[in-house]
Amino acid sequence: MTKLEAKNLQVSFGNVAVITGLNLSIPEGSITALMGPSGSGKSTLLRVFNRLIELYPEAHVGGYVYLDGQDIFEIDVIELRRRVQMIFQIPNPIPNLSIFENVALGLKLNRLAKNRKELYQRVKTALEKAQLWDEVKDRLNAPAGKLSGGQQQRLCVARSLAFEPEVLLADEPTANLDPENTAKIEALLLDLKKEMTIVLVTHFPQQAARISDYVAFLYKGQIVERGPTKDIFTKPRHELTEKYVTGRLY
Ligand SMILES: Nc1ncnc2c1ncn2[C@@H]1O[C@H](COP(=O)(O)OP(=O)(O)OP(=O)(O)O)[C@@H](O)[C@H]1O
Ligand SMILES: [Mg+2]
Image 1 (cartoon, rainbow, N blue to C red):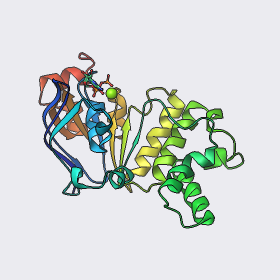
Image 2: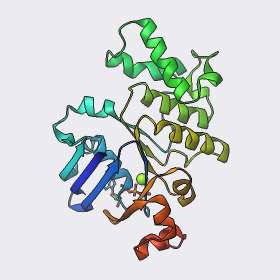
Image 3: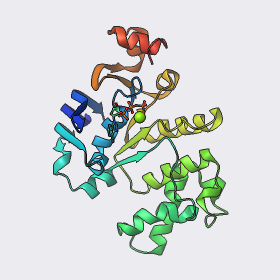
Image 4: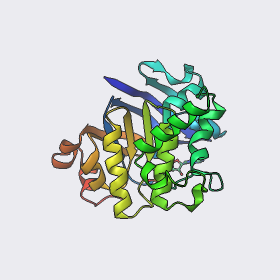
């Protein structure tokens, strides 16, 4: 089943075209790694998937993106962003807000919990799924800014999971983490794909090889090649892909 599908997608900033007729389908319940040189349009593509792109007044979007076959531009944007969550390269919890409130805030603002008990339960479940609960359960009222970088990233994952999303977009989520915290995030993503579809932007071919099911290789705003991860690494069809996975293209 296809979860997300881009058809002839075009994005420009002012009159500079950065995504130029991109086609991509993302299978449900899998991890698709998006790889490609800096500036190829990876982050821009993720920002289209949850329509964060609309926060950039100079951005123009053409073509189509479908979520479960439905045009995302016809879905209420708040609803779309609840269903399609995103985490970023630099963990961005609200540092002065408590660990608990960082996860609870979105649920409160969107009235997604009926009462305090349900709110607590949803926050707890999200922290458990993000594999952070055991480390923070005794200090839920401490400011999020006191957590380590790796813990802050897992807190951001928990904040996303609290919305019970169908898609998780992760834009280089381990770029600022040490190997131990990177391994934790990778294990977490592998676990989460049982219940959601994940699109992972990564600059580390080894990371894509370790945890992704499919790789899509982007170059200058187009998908050059997409396929099962193993095929992309062992028998890439396109010269650019081969160069990239062997570390000869940046
Ligand atoms: N707000 C913006 N205004 C103008 N140009 C932009 C804007 N955001 C991105 N771009 C341009 O669009 C192109 C694609 O950028 P994008 O951030 O999607 O690349 P990327 O593949 O994520 O790169 P990186 O690997 O460095 O994160 C780049 O040329 C970038 O300069
Ligand atoms: Mg980027």
